[in-house]
Image 1 (cartoon, rainbow, N blue to C red):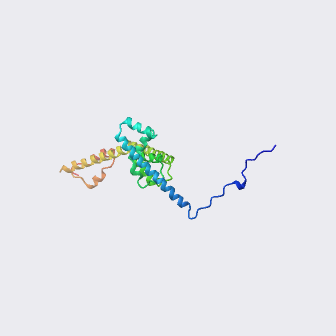
Image 2 (image 1 turned 60 degrees about the vertical axis):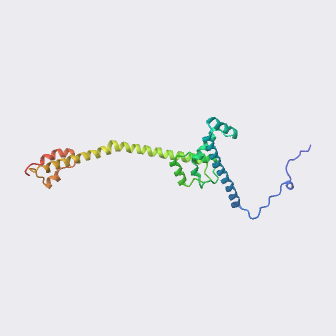
Image 3 (image 1 turned 180 degrees about the vertical axis):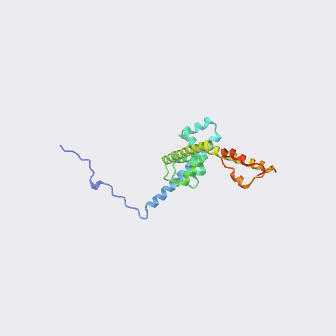
Length: 214
């Protein structure tokens, strides 16, 4: 009994494709980026049309539009969000899938500005990258808010009362000096001014030191 082999003979293999002259990686990169840019611009155009439709149609008709073109209501709303932040994509049309564009479009202004300044907002940006960036920003904001709350507590409970207490004591000292200077029968020597202390408890004992006729 002979077994048939399914192996392909070397002579039956397809001949290797000859390398086209004058073409290298950069050529294909440029072509791919051109197509990707067209795709991203098409996304922006589609978002503009869907946004216009949302303004022109009632809710029921807008949902019917989604069914007619094979897009869910959630997807239609995502394109509306993209259109509302279309200025963020000016000059950045290269190779951005619409899902990434949606994640970028819904970022708060502060998050978007940080993303743009980070240098990560480019063709290689993924939906996962945007979500990770948001988590990191939110975590940093929570930490900062916690620290700020602690400082607020310290300011209200410790620093501010101390400052107001010092201000009150300084006001008392000024009022004493003012009252003494207004009375012509009382003279205050410079040495006696220096004797008036900074602390409130010492101030009470120091006041009797200033006597008429000194």
